[in-house]
Length: 314
Length: 314
Image (cartoon, rainbow over all chains, first blue to last red; front, side, top):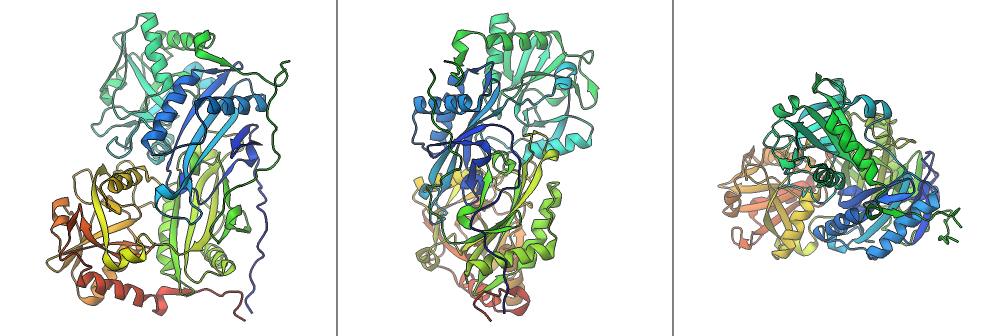
């Protein structure tokens, strides 16, 4: 007689989760409850787009820019959600407010979803919207914020635009993860990938900037059009610094006066070593520091922030 | 006073699922219960590898080849699971046996997982193993199996090997999905992507073959080393057909005598139209039919099958 193990009725989850609140299918949930089916094409085909906005001191920073990109991405991927822009804002707001987090990393996702018959035709799938707020996280830790990151330029090429449209924020990260492990092997903290022409492109979760002869430069093509990247352009305009999107050969990065990275997860972060070589004098540069200061100052400007109404505020 | 919506204790899932059984964290579950956290990097970075084996008439087909590839992929991605090969076989067997499915699509996955602190360092994550058995599915439906698929050669380039290693079976499909929508727009059933040199590469879930002057040809580089692709090589050896992995310029595909695709999801499937032009006389070719017949015959060979012991067999 064949003896088989028992079939459990419900999944018992052994994992522990960070604090946070999620939204799925009309329900606000503890982050530990926010799960997608293993049949969702968001997992099985990485067929999804998303955005991340951060909350700092109880207010979203530049939420509108993130929403613009998210809704544009949906259209490019032939996806739709049942919520309009105002409703998405309300959902994101409620996730943060219910979490009580004053500094938060807020992600909103649309996956292709699944069809009840597991059809392989993406047009048969019901798209799935998910949002969650968890504690604020940064690409760089405090030590790295102070002294700078060590980045290794990878031999791997960032997935090119003629394969995957980089302006649609996506989860295709195996090249970046491959770069990260390579960087760890070389004693670095993070990786910088190149484009198909050998120019600098982007790293795992961030855009890259080089300061050369007083000019602030960032890769032009094949990169995510980061909201923080755009913020750097805006800051440079205010500071009367020249900031341009250009091709940056990898050799040029090594001899730059300053290097920094930008991300919603951490803001502006100094890079003081590339491929084991110090950049400038090996400490965060003056223009980098100036831009970092302006970046955090901007969080207090009325037109950049959207204030969360928490439960304890009566 | 701020009024916020209620936080639900548990997620109430409105979706319906196909029949099937999954395995996660030591538990066998109905497929509807198999879910991963939205914080799992398998979703958030598509940082995962997987394999799919099919069960036909109550037996796995060429399970060993799928296991070889899966374990090799784990190593290349710096992942590990707590089960050895024999244990994975037992898990896959039990999923199918518990599902009762005689023809099944059996997928097993390892995701990077998550860390309780949501660390961005992949080395901090606890890798997650998942397996599931659902009803057998095919790239081509019955009509297409009989009359052949219409494929459109895409202008999009399959993600190149210097970005993502195609020998590690992965979920980076946005290029393939983009190709699919483009194909639908052009009245075709599916898409064939090209490589960076403009040669034929692969399609959404399948390898491609062209029969030219009696030779069976398939792209050499930048493609998944499909188990069904290898099976075609083996069949050709048995049939005394010349089968080679070579560069196939896209123009050559249009003037091929026969075209077919191979996948664990469907086996050998004829393509009778490419870019709106008939291939050969527009019906499935003789060599294609011969290989298809051999493919299904091989399912009865003892060394290719692993018989499932279902509950009703005493």
